Image (spheres, rainbow, N blue to C red):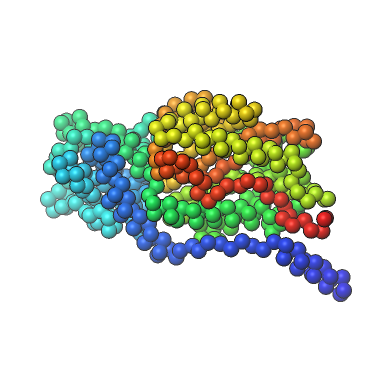
Length: 449
């Protein structure tokens, strides 16, 4: 009995060494819907007219069907709509004289509170006829449709809808069709001031989930596997009231594991038991209020007798932090993703950093519309997406890795980092900071000191 009581007491002491992090408030579903709809109203009212003026597209026609929605259309759905209804057609028209924006839905009912129905079913029983009449009355200069060679986000008009639409469109209007790619990209990539008020909460929540998952509360060396931690993350995200847009991964790099250290990005990591001396890495992203995060961080499993992460690994991590600084220092409005990549890699080479950069926009999608800054399998020139220019009020996942040699391991490791940042047109800031030190597990190794 005495031994049992002593064991329970020790367990209590260990539990006090690390307490669960408090989670940010997650709004009830009804309140989330209110915020989403208010945010959409603001974007339609204040962002869209300017974007249409910038791109020279005075009419934007967006067409999608239930369960096969255009990616742009999905970002415009009222919060109460989980999908389009039958065929959903939206028309945005900016009058070149009055500069006023019309928001119209060729539908039987209003498209939420933001867009009114504009289909007289008595006069035009056929939906396509109602659309053609609406376009003809306004006689726009350019009719933007969502077709794009390089951006899936802006290529949502499927073949059937395109054929149905263009077969009915008079030749004089058909000649005015243009790709709405530049307009769609601006709509998707631009973050409003209000979005940037609540975006930090989502990223902070992601950081806290990682911090808890990469702790002794979840990981018991010699027992817990990397896949156990992956599924813990999935469950934690769901239990916290968030969604995830991809299945997390947890990698292990260790002294005697050559395969895991240089795993190809094209393959998933193996399910290994986590051991003392392991350097572990997570890639995770969550969704809330239609925004997404994408974060990668590291932890180290202390070996018996160790009280801190080994110096060689800490130096490797610092080198990756420096690579982040090099990359963000190259952000200048108007530079393309390819130009930023070239300049950042050039500076990294001067500083003897073995760098790989594959950063991307983030927002309504995890891998969002906007300039790609490298790909994990392309460190030269990314055709199309890499040619996009950097614009103000946009968010990015600063994703990269730096390779360093660990002398005592007699091999290289990769420090793979990813943190979400905001570009205001002048400077870059991490929306909720970034990891600057590797998490030790356990946090307080008191019994070995």
